[in-house]
Length: 471
Image (cartoon, rainbow, N blue to C red; front, top):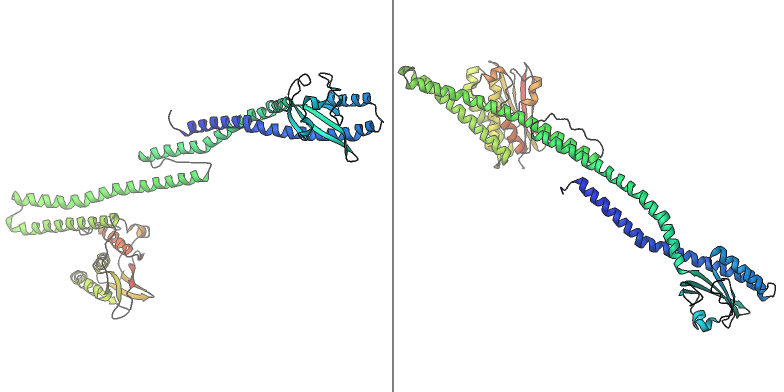
């Protein structure tokens, strides 16, 4: 049998029904018999007191004849089913309320010498020829002037208590049990509805998502736990959909960025080999091949670096160094590019020396990427400002240009791999679209933040923080 929630619930239902039935027929029956027995004993006690106070007192004071006393006791026997004996102090039975097996004038001491001495309650009393079945007897001594005047002995059927318990059980308890079973089944159906149905919907949604149908609408009602699980599954599907889109874009971008230089390299190499390109022009096209090779090398290195950030995290060599000196050295490497576009690079430091705790090589890479971007997107004859500012235990480094800026709808996308905000950037053969992705990964690896503020047509400013070195 396949293990399902429904099969397990059916098994639990059957086990619960059987267990309840067994408990009712054992412990429940015993408990009911005990309560009926206690009730019967209380009844015998009350009747004994009533007979003693109402009848025997008059009989002993000669206000009631023996025949009248016998008739009164037979009425009690008839209506209550309690057999009554009036016994003299010597054990002789002077009145017996029963016609069958009448024990009048018999001596109890002859029948059972210890009967009157056994206590108030005697169970399983049985005298051959007198009782047709075992009885439960209640002995009530009658005293007058501190002397025993006689005994009131009441008998009730021992089996009658069990029979009465069975009657109650069959008529009431079993009826309640029969009502309870359908209610229990309804409860199990409700449990199945609130557990198995949502799980079935969740399974179907998971199958849809696993097959690539990320637009499948999952709607769950009922318990908040299942709704939370459904929301988490829908969120996961959304993230998988984004990842799937990203992978498609990634493959498309990487294919394009690899295919273009490879096509150029293959084409120019073949042209050189077959003599299409004259010998005197080969240097020019060999330089183009070298340029495209360097571009491929840079793209591959960037991808490997991003992959190391994702899979293993960045291994940082944290040292204390002067960020001002690193900024100066990085700026010097752009001297030629700035001269070609007639761009002025202004360095503004809050103090002559500003020491930070960071990975010097990776921070230099961040500065290189940001300054390189600033130069690319700055107008000719413009300025670029690189500044440091101290705030508490943080040093803030900013790179600000006055160039074309970033469109508002592209601000959040500039950190994505291969994202290029402007067609002019797409024409830039050196750009890979990975520089800002690497920059953000490096800063986050330092547990710091990087932000950007940009206005289209006005300029862009990148600001990142580093931990200030302790004095």
